[in-house]
Length: 151
Image 1 (cartoon, rainbow, N blue to C red):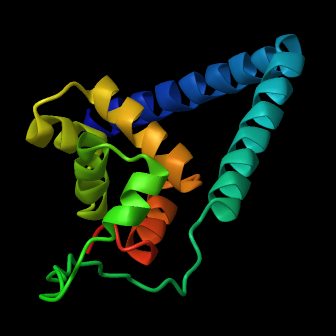
Image 2: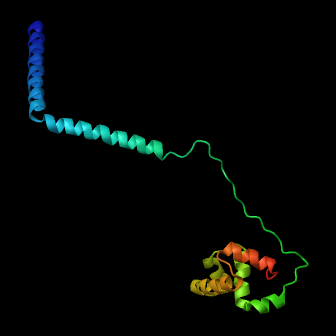
Image 3: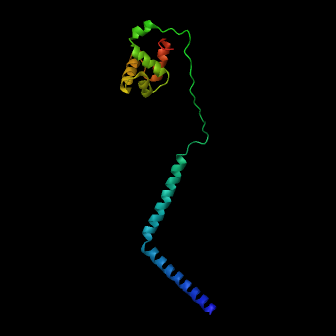
């Protein structure tokens, strides 16, 4: 009896496999364009992802830059050039903004420290830049130090 059950199960398994093979062949004939199109799309998508990852990978030999803030104290013998200050027409408030810019503060931080709005800081900064002939904050600080307006 056990042999008959085993033989019956084996024959049923072969029959199911044959039916699945016929079904597979029918599917391949009926939907061949869609299947090949899907395979080609999958290959190109994988290739595109691989090339994208290769091209956008950061270089392997990168250096790590560690930046830290260094506080440089003002010189003890600093004397502000009042004549140059008057010649340029820089107001005390604009001078204070320039000093805060020299400390490396952002417009928001300057506004909080000077108790004014951020737009007022931008206005004072642009006026200082115009009076000094500077285009950037770093250039304004450099010129302010050269003209002995800030330490």
